[in-house]
Amino acid sequence: MDAIADLARFRVPGTGLIHPVILSGGSGTRLWPLSRAAYPKQLLPLLSERTMLQETALRSLSDAGFAAPVVICNDEHRFLIDEQLRQVGIVPQQILLEPVARNTGPAVAAAALWLMARDPEALMLVQPSDHVIGSVARFHEAVGRGVAAAQAGKLVTFGIKPDRPETGYGYIQIGHALDGGEGVYLVDRFVEKPDRAAAERFVDSGIFSWNSGIFLLGARHFLEDLARLNPDMLAACERAVHKGTDDLGFFRLDAAGLGEAPALSVDRAVMEHTDRAAVVPVDMAWSDLGSWRALQEHGQRDVDGNVVQGDVVLDRVRNSYVRSDSRLVAAIDLDDVVIVATDDAVLVAHAGSAAEVSGVVERLRQRNRPEPLQHTTTYRPWGYYRTVDAGNRFQVKRIMVKPGAKLSLQKHYHRAEHWVVVQGTALVQRGEDRMLVRENESVYIPIGTEHRLENPGKLPLHLIEVQSGPYLGEDDIVRIADNYGRA
Image (tube, rainbow, N blue to C red; front, side, top):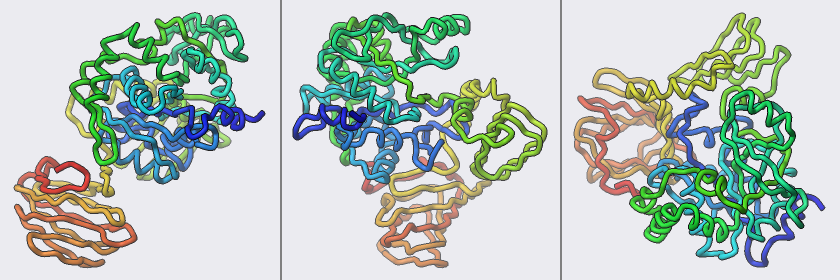
């Protein structure tokens, strides 16, 4: 029986028994400067034309016995995630918004509570949104093997066969085979990231696997163990869900309730302490893409062992990862390096040290630099803007507005704006006036004037905005009305 058919036989008529729960958190530090807090790696197309989030969601299609996914993310990413799912034709069951970050334990608990109210026997397939699975067929097969155990009350995780003594992953010691569960084993113990010597022993023993961070859990069974092992977390998450509110089609968890939950991972909160843990070993070409080295390993190498992307010229460069998302990058006579260039930052590191980039990001944060948080392109639910130039009392931005979208009705106390339409037609509200501004035409917005920009057409609207005034910060926006709940 093939993997998809094997999963489909577990479907309950009228429902999708297996509910994908996609965790889309993370601060975007390990793949800086490409990944930023406002646009982390799961929202980026790192290995294909699709983003990591899209690839994760597409692994759990309804024709493979899955329900539509439940996605958990922070507020800032909600419109980006909704749009990326729409681009690949996926309508989620719900997108749950975390007003505060509390790690994966509370996130999974909130999803379990939300699902329990709709399907008391729900099975959750919990997946991080930023992992690579090279063999989807083997993944589906492994999920199918774990279903019976999860239905019987086991909390199932998936262990990856290690091919090297990796110190950056947690490990699972595999115990005895589970009665009646082919290819499913009891967990003897979980081990946090080991040192090199311990990792070598684990790999040589043949009874350890990497902890993938992917789980198949009965929502009811998971919550039962959470009530026993971490009742404070469960109580806080119950308040967060009970007092949560609908917000433009999203479900916003209550900030006060969620904020009281201990900030623990699923492993720390439940899996390391439960007596119900089970593991399905699987070899599915998995990686968490947690470093530039990992991205290099999954890339297409040239004859010199280099993985190259973008506008790059190399001379006598070997075994390196070189990527440019903007300018030309030229490199000469280098070996085993990582070079990553965006339009506002360049990372150059020995490949063995590239994992230390998080320390650089922290130093930038301490200096209140914008580079850890934002790209020069900032995405909004209506489109995006990109800072092109800035200086004393002026700033120039390139703006794109999606067809049918509109910005908030707003005004500024410290700056005037001049808009020049490059492509498309803009519908502009300026004070009491409404006007169409076409290609090669412009409009001036004086300081303090209420105004709004809208794209009434069927093609993207592109314009150049020139701001001038004594203060040009984004907090000089007074929103009067807004389609996205920001007023």
